[in-house]
Length: 396
Image 1 (tube, rainbow, N blue to C red):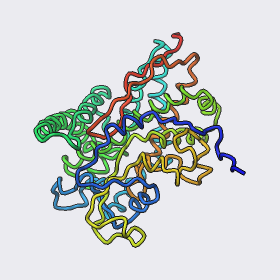
Image 2: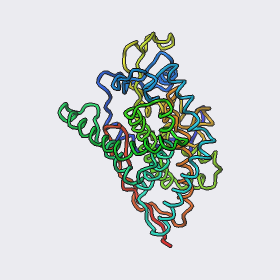
Image 3: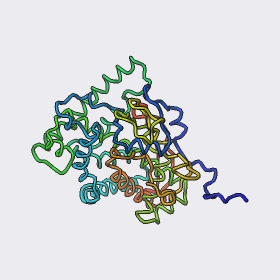
Image 4: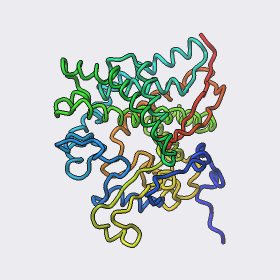
């Protein structure tokens, strides 16, 4: 007798939106070996023997390594700095510091939609993400829209794996000019303001720790990438999927906060914004991984492949299933936020701002997806971009 299919309502479904474009632009660092199995990747990301290998701290020469941004650190120094930064991403901080910004910007954006009857969703989500991240980092001295435009120019036109040498050189010089513009117009004014009047934000913390202006700039760039660009795509993707799946939309609008988070994390599992994480074993490879991995080799950890690994995600890994995480006893987003000590510190901030905005948006009467987003590819970030997504409602 044939065993019953564990999820008959999902059998044969492929709800992924960006798998094809990601596969078409699948380029990794030339010295790297790709890994895609969820279990192996988790061991690598959690193993103390493995170090960051995508961006190297030696690009930023400092006398004291502790002055490097947390992204570039490993081991005890990384753990100490993550512990110090945890207060900015705690449930208390989300409720007291960031939720007012999320509510204010959501009300403004949704109010504008109700007034005009039209919203470019990817643009609205970008403005929300910039406002929230600016509050976390301390970049509140510049007009948000102008700063958002400067950051987008840096992120969209950088270097990428496989770029020809001449173009790489030109891109690097343009990136430096755009980064200098961001520093002079946005970061430097924030540094001056925080020196005069410290606040409960990351720039104030970095000044307390003795960071130079250059290192503060680097940290701001890291958080801009992680907190602004990825959340923008996450919000747009979540809305697109809910429009395409009315039953999921109904479950989201009528569900409690826990149910809403489960839906959002499953959407992110299916179409993670990030593509690869890079690690290298500088010490001995753990016994459990010997024979599979070699010390000194750089590995490209494929987040999409891990999220779609049936051994971890269970049957029908390409289908949207909000009950998957509970059934498989796994975190809902799988590897979408990374794993181990370098797991994205702002994951809960991104989930909360997405939940609040999407919930408010889908309560607008007569909300319609007038134009689904166009999928583009950002080669410098190795991630998808969703553009020109238009939603409408009856104005009034």
